[in-house]
Image (tube, rainbow, N blue to C red; front, side, top):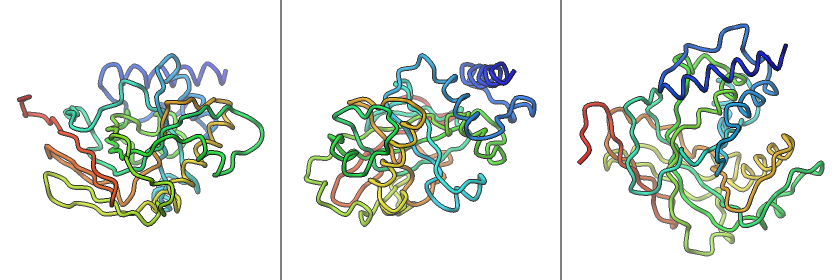
Length: 266
């Protein structure tokens, strides 16, 4: 019975995604009762997809309180989600209309699921590159602000479009990533500033949380996949803006053009 419920919930979310449509929330009879069920639905939703990365959400205490938990949540990024710096993101169907500045780690070695926890040094030894990213989240729920953590997890933690910057070309491993300032610009104006420490105190700590979370779900992380470690600063409203740029102190920038309703493609 539970298996049928989870599959029916996943089917509703998949159908909404395929139709570029939304549901208010999952029907009460199909809602996950806890995060375990939420992640099981998420795995059904993403089954068969080309998983190129993972995202962390709810890294701030305020964000966790809002959805009724005391820890982050995770989502999966498929190849169809990925844009690159300078690309155009189509935002005409996006309900959240927000952008987030994030640190991104790319693996150069596999991290297989196991019983023992991974420590931060072992995790970092499997990281080949650091990048800058912009997340453009969205939800399959009209009432996403009222969904709560299990339903948001089922909705793949609001994964939608993600802008992946180039590899950072400097010796960043010696740096205090928590002290690095992030700046997010909307249509050329500074909109939000943050720090690497906004991601669970340090992006490396956020990455290690994600690695152990995925390992507990008995999922292997693979060389070439990446993890984006959560918003630095606050999620920034973008409204009908046409351009977003993120700069991380000393590391460079990533940018994305935004196509909104009523705008033509030049």
